[in-house]
Image 1 (cartoon, rainbow, N blue to C red):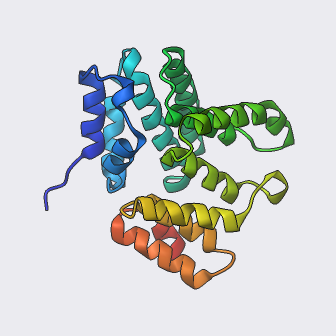
Image 2 (cartoon, rainbow, N blue to C red):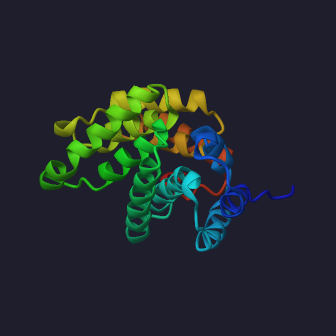
Length: 225
């Protein structure tokens, strides 16, 4: 079966086109990357070096940087690259907002980026308000935004209980996301992570589903070894 390098095509569109950021939706991008394998994703990074976006493309570029942040956090486990992409996602999303492209997804990326910087009480004090302000803006624009729902589910999963972490809410959040986007290997891997402490059998089933959707999902593969 012919391999389709969808993320490469997406970035090529970013490099070559002048589409308005208002035409860019989270769903369009997420659907394009759901089934890309690790090799494809890494090969597509080369194209980012040639990106010189005009004002209407910052929102799309921020979304791509956000995806690479999670790719290197959860799939490749490369903290340095994840940090670099996270910083780029914040900077680029803020640039998009300077041009008044007030997409809920863009505000969600800002919130997600600052949330990723919170590693303890001091960073929580520094970045917590920025996270909550950006989430508030995203909710005001589109409370049903998929990236916002993903951010909230991820925060419930990763945050300690004293900081609002709640695995039951994380399970509910990622279950809803898999219903909205049943082709997402990434969401099923997160759902497997949610179940690891409470139901190992169900966790393995979710990781297996992630691999069925994307045989090169190394995160799910690691969990089943």
